[in-house]
Length: 267
Picture (cartoon, rainbow, N blue to C red):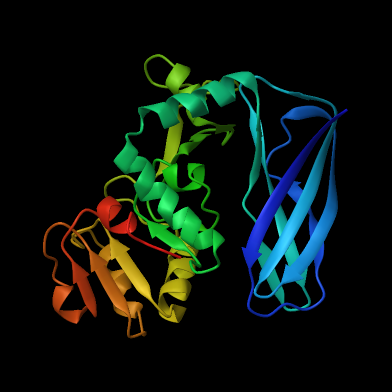
């Protein structure tokens, strides 16, 4: 039996009676039994300390697979996702380590700082045009990918799912191992429309935001650039090396690299 103790520190302003939902695996790529036991749930001021035991009974994870568990704090009218807990097979873990190793220090700062802000309860969502999945790898939970992700790939014939590693290992045009159909990344190509569900969620978070921070974009790619028009707050921050058409409408403009700016954020 293997037990992994996971601790979290969550910022909560209003807390009622709480319980912890059983963590949900996004994919069952293992054999054995995984038990999730809440150990400690203690509120101190505006913070909640959470300790959880993950008990792995004879668990065997497929080498090229992995799964993510997302613990949740639940009240009658509020749900807070905690940082995900990942269990990876050997090949999946090595691929993960390779991707991190290829990132330079500045790239890591760009993606890790939003996660830190989110963990402190001050970031509700990330709306991104990136398709590399690096926000999620840094730990961010609520990432809305306007242009999709290279980590999701589907057969155009039978719709079977394939991960990024399968695509990397393929030679030539990736083919489905079930029906032989062509595999297409779940990304938006030229002249293709965006996912309506992602657009609606993005509009919701942008329109309801107290502060909107736009970073690392010249705001010239539509329809993504048009989403800014739905912001109703009075704290619009633009961070970009060059000027944008929205500079005059922003409450704060910083013409600098987003990684350098984020490195000065203090919570």
